[in-house]
Image (cartoon, rainbow, N blue to C red; front, side, top):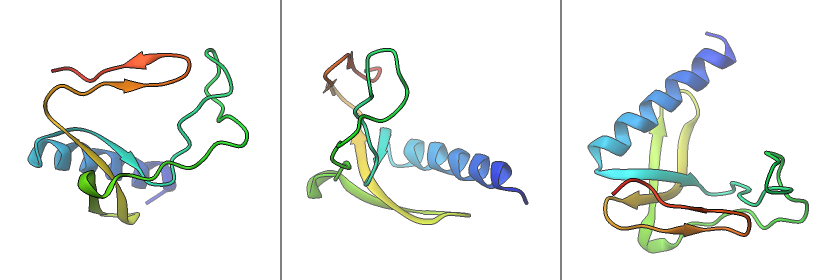
Length: 91
């Protein structure tokens, strides 16, 4: 199986697990969230990698990647605020 197919399989698995666990989103530990600018998808230089709080940390065992740890965001009112934009998952 090529890398694209493995990635797609892992993404599908994560979506299924989020539904099963009644979570609305997941942010992996080590993710670089700040962007270079409001119109760029490139990471901001010097950013601090994301680290989930202990109270929301979960570990998923992906079919190809293996263990992936990060923050599972539970269903409810959630607001994520960033420097260039604000986003909230559906309620």
